[in-house]
Image 1 (spheres, rainbow, N blue to C red):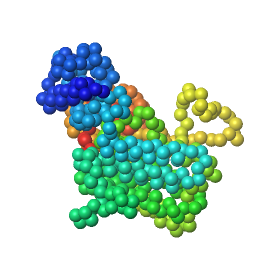
Image 2: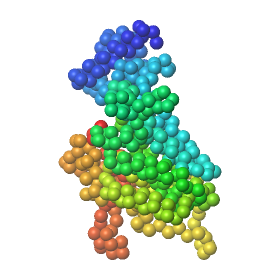
Image 3: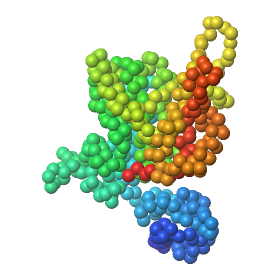
Length: 404
């Protein structure tokens, strides 16, 4: 863009920031007059660039809090049609972090890869290190020294002549001390670091260990996405962020891990001990580990595996218990209320809330499931259990507690 065009962009940024701080409604004509853009240009930007930035209200438009995520430089980047605006240091680290994370997923999901867990743990911890450093640099006002290693009053220089930067552990400790990384996320990262550090000992396959590490890795991906979106408003829509379930592998494919029984036992015991500390974790945004199950579901997808009912006594048997059905409905009413109270700043158990609950219950098993406390007794008392989709729905109605 020419300097004249950048001047208009800067005027728009100043205008939006001022209107947000004042909380005032404005018209598109006011914006046009302030910036010098034509009405058609303003209308185009409204449709293509400002869908989350501006909210239409009675009498005009209001600026949303999204404007607070921009500086004058990043707003120029947002408006630019190409990469002519130089990226900030935290943005460079952020893109590298996401690239490392995507690479970890791609490696893990390769059908025949002999070191999938080791390589995943190395790439995923690298992704976390870059992400945490990006946060530290952004919070410092783009000051690179925020991640430099310091020895008393002097920065440490590496043998290559560059500044030595802090480790993942140090970056994590700093952000946790500031309350910006939840404890469960920090412990999940530490589990990954332990897996990475121990991976040099692994030489032969062990399915149990592979399964445990996939559960920790899946939670790491969820945590990574959540913090990246909270901190940087990053758009992950162009990626598929998931790991292929271990149950899709042949046993011969799961051949990364190793070990003599003592090493394996020590690591498994450590992973289980840390997971046990977070058994009562209520925040659905973060997890220490996530279990994946292969399930049969109804679908019209042409690629789906087909099954049919048969009276053949030699056919494989599938048994679904009521406990299996309820696994997707993990919260009773009181647990759900506790989660909502901690999750939102403006949550109240008032008539509005009870109306919302009635609306969700009317949707049936999409949101909740009713079961008898004594399944064999038709006169038993009923109890309602709720799906995590309920929490997703309440996210649209209430204001989330912000992660610093």
